[in-house]
Length: 208
Image 1 (cartoon, rainbow, N blue to C red):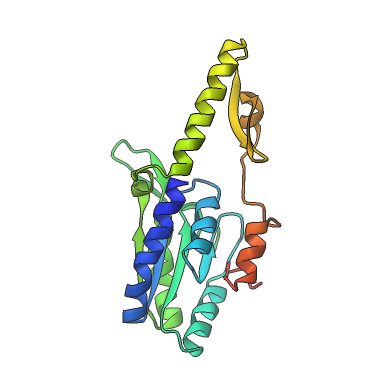
Image 2: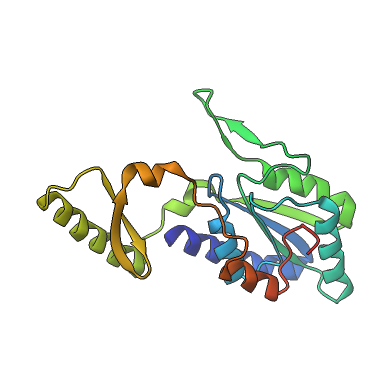
């Protein structure tokens, strides 16, 4: 919840700069191979375009959305992109750290370079990185952590091990750790959040 809150606040702060200078502002956020943070923050922060790893996009579709906004009298546009979104050709961009290990990064820079000539707009980008993890926990974070802690202690007292505490259907539960590791929880493309974003006219770069 905190990561989404920080990303949403970042979008709120980018709105005035984008509007006052008629710029296209791109915000790159964390999320590994899933687009949950970008999707949630994009809706909450009023993004015009959301790019997530689960949905392929074309630069032409992004440029069309930005041009459409300009035609309708808006000189600014706000785009949020998950770090794992590949280039238009499908290449995953990574950055090597001091130890030589790769991590996701660079998609915002790539998009800025590509969209500038396509839209004739001034495009700037911001990468939040680990700043998203550095804020004070929200009250929801604290309550959830407390509920998880109590449930975990109850599991130990009951002699139940190798289980992961989880939140499902508005309640704390537990599942086998192995089951949790079997699949990666990607964005549900038919879920409520996707339908909400589509209904708000947010572009995902797929021409829909």
